[in-house]
Length: 129
Image (cartoon, rainbow, N blue to C red):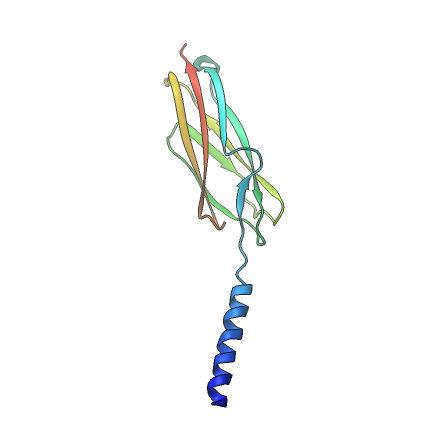
């Protein structure tokens, strides 16, 4: 009986310690996960917006890749790990050349954050040449 009680206590203590050690990184956007460029002129060329991302988790946030929904959108991002409570950036550039009218583009941020991937959106209206 003592042996069973000892094994049971060991299992409970071990599982509690494993649960306590499960810290994570967590990603959010400081202002908004969506940005509207409004009306942009095709003749003016590419436009950019920089999103500020925040690590509100307990471990460093590592952004492994950022993927845009189309080749007309190019992302650049902070490559170094983002410490807990600190910020990094994702700069998104949209090229309106040959793309008149309204647009909405998605950008996926892949990281070690608790959500796996995080979505950003840009939108606007391209006024043709």
